[in-house]
Length: 138
Image (tube, rainbow, N blue to C red; front, side, top):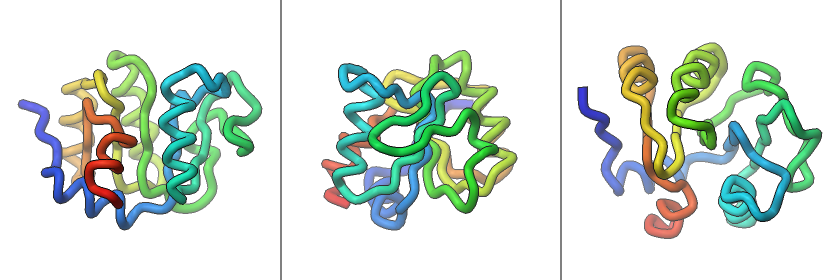
């Protein structure tokens, strides 16, 4: 199966509707891409939820060790982990109340994609959420 992302228009609609973004692999180091992208999304008005067992907080927000620790609905799970780790994150994603699985630019995993699509989820891979937000002007 080939990985097919939603259209740019659909991605724009997703970003307009979304409010809460859990960021798996968010670093508390301002030099890291995960921090910079998440900071930009936070400044754009999104609630950012850091998910990283090795930090206490990022962007002024308490970090969670796993997706399962987050209370309430999550609109987008934005993943900054190696491609080979995307399937494990996908399995955890399936156990929480979340809508969109988004793997950042440069990240793809066909097994994770097929698993989530077979369960009816919207999946975006190899796209930068910050760039897509700028393009869509969400």
